[in-house]
Image 1 (cartoon, rainbow, N blue to C red):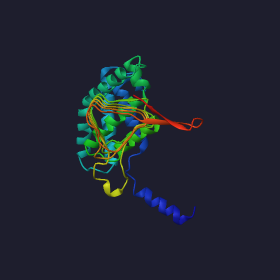
Image 2: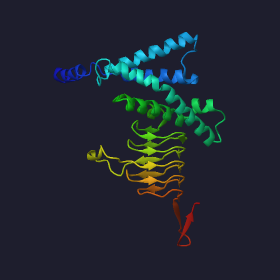
Image 3: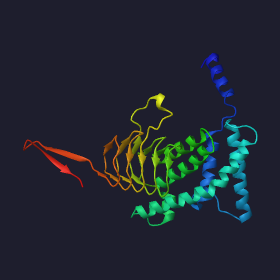
Image 4: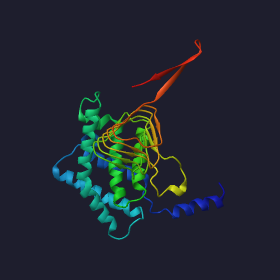
Length: 275
């Protein structure tokens, strides 16, 4: 490495002296999950006073992270940290509903603790709920780092700016993609490999709604792809596995993939319809 290139790298470091480290952000996220859910705690809780002190320390850590993110100045970082921690009970209650939805929606789930400890869908939703609140408070970059961290562990990619209602369940979850402008209603269940994406990836469309709307009580089975900002899946609909949808369907619809099998010996095509 020559000196000129080393100087280029050095200047890039100088321009990022106050970038919050990814490690600090993820550590904060781990500590918050440990406070909200005992299975994620790194150490046992002593007295209630110790528990309160842990929460105060987390709030200070969050203030440092926000300050280093260089998006707000002065006491705004403290205001944002206070607003976030005031919203933590709301996040917790919302996650309890997600736990209920997963427990009730998966016959394999034995206990709610098992959902919290072992279900990647819940872990990804928890990261989303926390990141989405930070996004609502005007925090940049950090929400995406939190959801991408969960993505790296669970293979479930939820953009923090997506809008997701209550009692959301992701069953299994590997390969799920939920785009930035997706709107999901209440009591929605999706399976692994579902993509809620955009029809195009033009940079000019960054400010428009590019991803679909999924109304209340919809089930989307594995491998389904639903694209487009004007695409609305009506409430109480079922979208079958491997369905490709780029247009809206009315409420109470059932859309299934039709597979065709060619019998080469008989020289004919059989149609198999899954219902």
